[in-house]
Length: 265
Image (cartoon, rainbow, N blue to C red):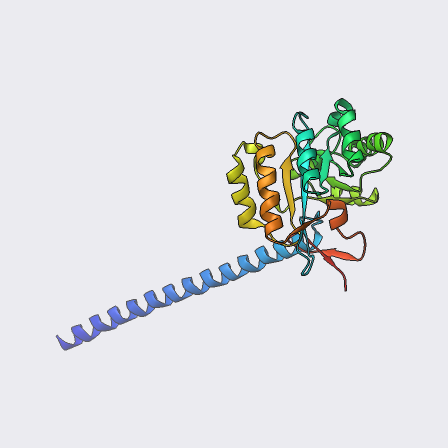
């Protein structure tokens, strides 16, 4: 009887040891596999981060409380004069990113923007997804607008904004080869979604910081109602205004992984 109990206990104990051993081995394997995956994933992120070329989303202006207002113009011009009048009322210069077919259709408005001292940026000729294009087509899309604007205003655009915010290394490289600076935006007002003026103001209030580039659209539903509210809020907050071409550094700069442009010291 005693012998049977001892034998049974040994069998049970041996089974328990094997079970624990299997669990421990499984845990070790899981931990090792997780660590390997973590290392591979992070290596990929680092590699892509190191090779990725970025446009300027925001500018590090230090303690200088400045922002840039920008307007994409691709369809319609009914509200362009109203925007000009509002900006002139507050003595603010802004940047208008123009699409080529808009320039072709509204030559008088292009001239009017230039005559009022506004900065004209390039938004491509046909408003295509630039990352899908070959280098030759990228250059053609950009240069068409550059030449057209220069013929109308006497000044060649310096800043380029990709349609849909769509870019890749090839685009950034070709923009640089044209001695231009690719930019995005750090605050999207979402005016293109048709949200009302108070909602647009709320978005700006919740996000604004030094060196921001704020995106509007020249023919959005509520731009004429929202623009004075945004401007007055920013003025009351002590902000001043520059065009995007004035805001970005022309040389001696770096762009970090978040798209923030820094002046090299």
